[in-house]
Image: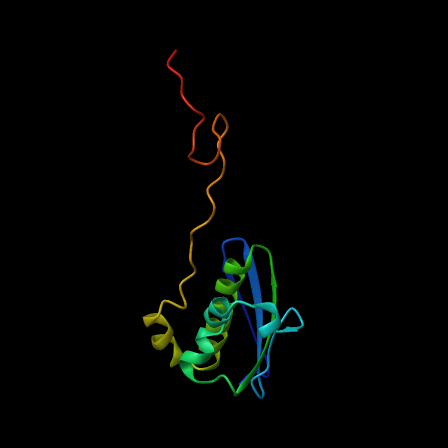
Amino acid sequence: MKEVINTVGRRKTSVARAFLAPGKGAVSINKRPVEDYFKDDRKRHEALKPLQLCGKRDEFDVRINVCGGGASGQAGAVSLAIARALVEFDEENRALFRKDRLLTRDPRMVERKKYGQKKARKRFQFSKR
């Protein structure tokens, strides 16, 4: 087994690099504890879902660098990066994560604004006369 497993997860415009190493369960994101980085319980739960699902929360130290996007995109990117790292560690986790769609890269991105329109799909008010 490799000493440190390095994987990448992406969501919207966020990119997360996860470094998984055997340890006591410390999770840090951008050199801050996960509780400080994701103050919202829902986002924290989404980010750490792969660790909870396979029951390895206390067996690994996870160090994550994440940049770009907002809190929601970053939580999704962190979740994907951790899931990929755990699959690289133990292939049996793949079926478990597949069932909850944790290994699927969410392709949804913000649609670009078009010229002659107010936003991506919203138009300026139409006046017939």
